[in-house]
Image 1 (cartoon, helix red, strand yellow):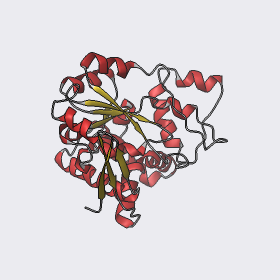
Image 2 (image 1 turned 30 degrees about the vertical axis):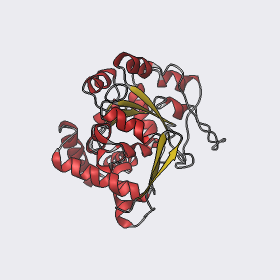
Image 3 (image 1 turned 135 degrees about the vertical axis):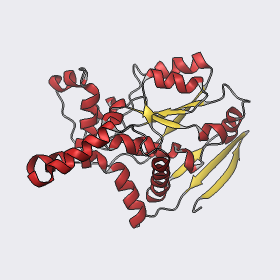
Image 4 (image 1 turned 60 degrees about the vertical axis):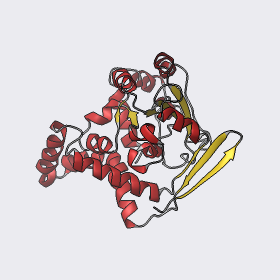
Length: 277
């Protein structure tokens, strides 16, 4: 392990820090590209299929095969690929994680705390909340059962897009619908998600890049679920997301109505893809 872990005591709490030296060499860069690059990669494939006749059949065939295969395919091998991506992303970003009350998470994991699991509410979303990979179980950052069962819940559209659905499933992602949320809590499995979601992207202003947008209005359903199931809510803040991507967010009443329409989820996916260009 290249991590330098450090413990310290503040009052009755144990603060635990996981610090990974940054490594932007070829292998970590390749892993992160294979993970995050598909956001723009799908758009590039669409353009190539449209403009280059020779590649059209190959691209359409590959996307069709991916579309009909289950997201977890090829299952065990896919999980190993996802674990490798998470481990290399940890190096690439020089991940630093500070847990302010590690003992409390241990207590929950051992059944001595409220409930037997926790909901990790993360902010901000920004263009893409890539720090969520910190919840990948293979990184062994969260203790016991909380870490072993952790999954990041995200927009279900991702799991309908070819190739991307495989990559995010390999990394341990699941749709952020109420059914999945309840099912996982009933099995005492850990959920992590960004309450503000894509709504925060629509509120971002390129003219004020120093602003951090956090949208929690009408995002209290997870609090009700936590009270109903008797599980803890752990607030998480992602630092240094701002400025990671150049972007343009269309404004106006028409775009607002479009964002709230039935095609909202596909609009969200397009917003993610377009943010790369």
